[in-house]
Image (cartoon, rainbow, N blue to C red; front, top):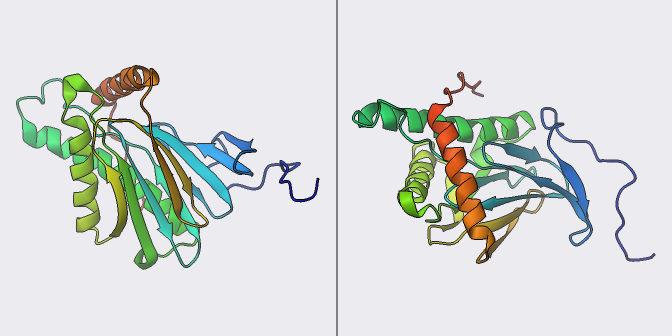
Length: 214
């Protein structure tokens, strides 16, 4: 019908390295949509939407405004590993390495797609206090990402962080527009339980190898 957007007959091409990500046609937004789960990131150079749900985790939406290339990550700093709880220098060092890896992977993927580091603009979201038994997790994530951006001299242009509510996040890399919706429903406890499980896995997972810098 004239004036009505329809799903494409074939999936539009994705950037190399992101073929494994789940993409689907969203009729309400008339575009392809990608869901980013904890520990994942995605970069796009076309008209599509990247979405996620955040509790204590943080997402950085990073975009080259001139070239209309952008992406989103979704990460949480790990707990101290067993034996590190009394040695905070080790624990903090491990968290910094993990968080830096999450940020560098996203930035490097944008640069590989043709973006320029000096043109990057950043928006950050999440870090809510949804894990009541560990109320500092969200704040640690927020403090880390802000410290990282300051150290790397990346421009922060918008943020919606903290508070006690989970967030649904929708990012449109081509335009840079972001939609945020607070979630206040029975799913809050389910999200908190999932993040607690994810946090426990991170405590025992090894740090990934060095990332390639550009």
